Image: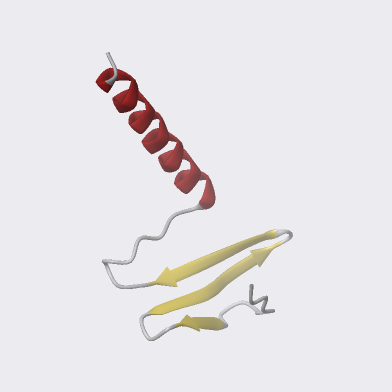
Length: 68
């Protein structure tokens, strides 16, 4: 993992197509902006975990319904 220190308005480039900008720092909260092509999916961790859990439950339900 690459760990960087940035100040507000400073940017980080990921490849040629993704730019992450530090918009604001307020105490222990950092607001970032992400500029990426429309085809790049950007998710917060809690949303990603929720989607993975839903997918896992769906797959388990399909396995159980196929065995009966």
